[in-house]
Image 1 (tube, one colour):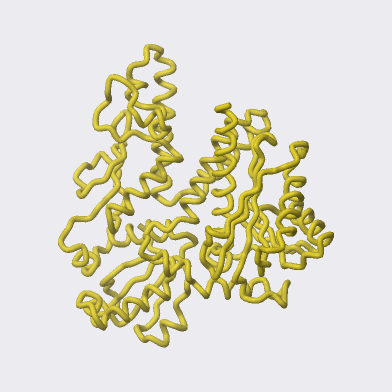
Image 2 (cartoon, rainbow, N blue to C red; image 1 turned 30 degrees about the horizontal axis):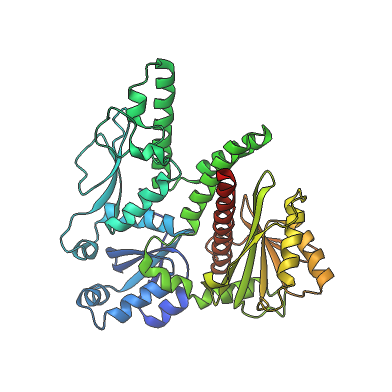
Length: 439
């Protein structure tokens, strides 16, 4: 692999505090040019400092710290990319303390049997098949299994060892589709060839995700969704939209290592970073202790819903979530629905007033929300998050657009909140739609 350019810091507490960012990335404990240990974190500063603190009590941590004289790091824009880079470095460098920390267990890989007609994806402790592709190693079976589980929801694949006589159970729930067992027994050779090609394309997409090459995948999915929408094939467009949502949530919003969740959620630095980012435009904005984010979800204006998700002190606060079912069934646009929802929220006088309002959308949505807030006398800073690419739109007359780096702590916090609003609005919308279909 071509190693990225790491930034080195002497192993001194004051220099680490000053030099390490509170961002996603990979870090390495080193003695001169020898790499002793490789790790990844959603907060590089907190994780490296925790090694030093733990060295006072833990023998293994003490060995790493006492034998090192520097730490170097590389910032990634997502935790997922940090995990992949960590795996590649462990695989290529074989740092001694990564091996010892596994208590003599062999490494864990994700194996893709690409040489087969219907490639399988599974976990493996050994790289003993030269015809297969291996990805990893990964620090635990739980992390590797979670990766497989999440990717499979976007690009279905088979995990059966042998082709059976009929389609497997997982095809019924969309996790093995098309199922090799079904394909193999088709009489129509043309359809059999088409579905075989489709299945292999999906496995190829899985490998691209595991390589970290996700930008072209998302580009293709967005283009497919737009084609379906323009052709008024709305059900197909919804299927692709759900794939995009799942993949983006997995890549940008999910903690694969739950042990780091507390550090990530309670990051005071993320809130301070956000406040500093926006202070030029909202000088009186305090550190945003309460942030509310709104998203509208509908399918051809049917069973339209909206969500309000809340972050309190940098922590997702599900107790404060609110669901809105659009009352005016005559409304035909997301803008009109947004007017209804924001008006209803403002009229809830018993709810706490937020420090910051976030709208899922860009300038058109913000203009609508600004008008409603002005009419209601609701004076709260408001911003929008537009996508493709992700960017912040400032809710002022100029509608200034900001494009912070993806590793910016404040921007990371906003995008996580936006992703959660998508999930929550979609969940309620699907619930209502399914109820309607059962009537």
